[in-house]
Figure 1 (cartoon, rainbow, N blue to C red):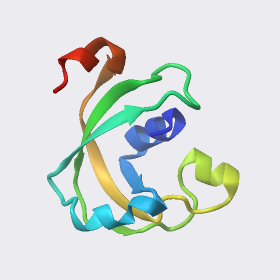
Figure 2 (figure 1 turned 180 degrees about the vertical axis):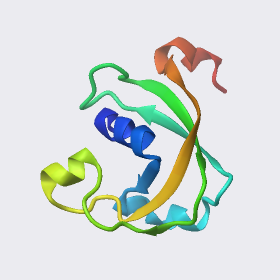
Figure 3 (figure 1 turned 90 degrees about the vertical axis):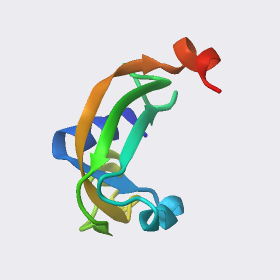
Figure 4 (figure 1 turned 90 degrees about the horizontal axis):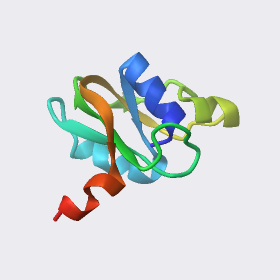
Length: 103
């Protein structure tokens, strides 16, 4: 996830699936938890880090329009399906610090 979108997600309690991942809406249900990872592009503070665990609290619904910062900037819907979420854990775990411990 892009860092700016992560901040928006936590502040607004909403998560969106990218167009290419829309099939996941049939697998992710209320009560499931999402582990959020920030990649190494378009980031400043949380690059290559796990930053949150979010619990899904609603059913999926179509996006009402451009919502996340990158969508608003591009004036297009990039995340056509959205769901409400609540933070379970928020913090930073750098991938490089734990990669050797992961199976």
